[in-house]
Amino acid sequence: MQVQLAVRTDPERVFVNVKNISGNTITTGFGVCLAVGNEDVAASADGVGAVLFTASAELNPAFVGVSKGDIANNGYGPIIAWGFADSIALSQEANVTVGLLAGNSLLIAGAQGGTFTSAAAAWETLSTVAGKYVINATTQSTNGAINYTKGMVRAL
Image 1 (cartoon, rainbow, N blue to C red):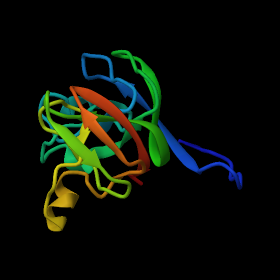
Image 2: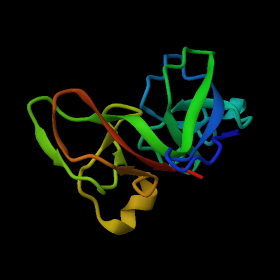
Image 3: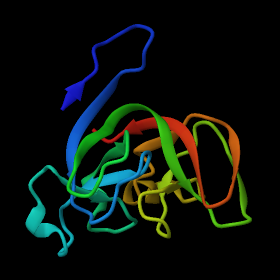
Image 4: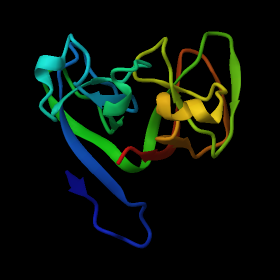
């Protein structure tokens, strides 16, 4: 774990180093969880092995943050576990435009593993889909397969 030194003009961040055991590259801005609770990866539950975060009840408690950069399969890389993230991947269906407001909770999207959406959900369900962990920081409209936003990650 790396904690950025407190600097008055920079947002504080906490990074966690993980090993990608998903079988594919984990892309910058995608949600990541530790490999626990899923029978496919349970044997790798060592606190370092990580996979893309999906809307799965087994993986919800293991959300660790947002990837700071691309992490190749079987490679190591930093995850933003706390602090401001410059890139958070958004999932949207083609030809659907969604207005994203600063302060919206971002929920993990089921269709594209690792991406987030601002789809409305009842407040009591936010804790079950990681909505309490990632907050959007920009106002924008999204249209297309994958767009990016900035926001606050609070996985610790």
